[in-house]
Length: 319
Image 1 (cartoon, rainbow, N blue to C red):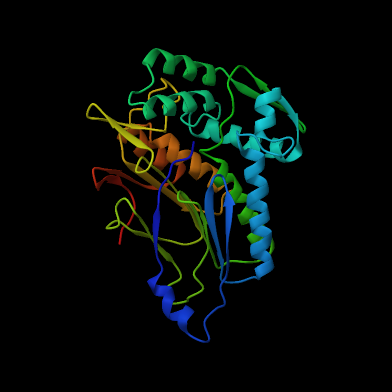
Image 2 (tube, rainbow, N blue to C red):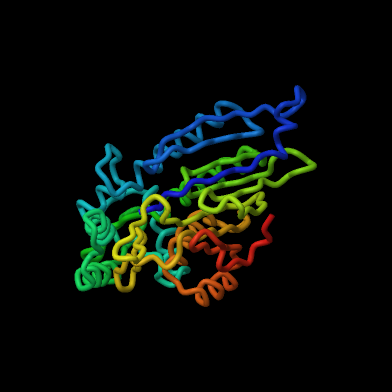
């Protein structure tokens, strides 16, 4: 499941332009998808572009949800029937498989049952017993996808949960739309954990300043970038002096949290970059600090790790 996290978007450099009578028009509209509210702000384009993006978000959310939906041929039906025929879903799941490989298995899309049991156990005041957690993690690791053309089959007993990647994949579809319509100045928030940033449209201050609610004293600049974060601020538990998270370890099933939040960012030139960032922020949550550093270097990520109201590791130039 994707994590809850709130952003403070420091847009002060833009206020002068927006309050000026000659400033750019803002077309904006909220959307509902992936169980959260999205915000679409286009500093170019039209209101119809906002409407089209809203429709894209809603359709993609219905397709990728693990819970019952009217969408035919989506993840819910695939989990139920163990097979589906859908070109859109096949396209999405090919990306999922690529990202699973690129994150060294630290992102696993087959953790639905482990996620549900772990969260239920934590809500009752105890982590899921380690033996049961390990059993469910092993089931997930032994599950895979077969994709032949538009036909998809689940091989194994695991069930798909794309909460850690769905919003990022959707942002990549939004990015494709923006590129096709030559819209370069925009701000898209995928709920409280994922961002797609173009340019501000202000020549003097072309970049956005981004700061997480968990640590507002920390901020960095970004433009033409994706940003994703994992956090335990709203879905964390403290039991017997230890912190636990809704983000489970795909190797042993543990929900023990070693960090409070983790932020990653990268430019949008690469294909499927937002899907990768979403999964990477979750994957890195279960790595130790040396692994995080090496992984970020290997894939060219900017990142910051937070614990106990301070940054404990980062390669970002902060404000």
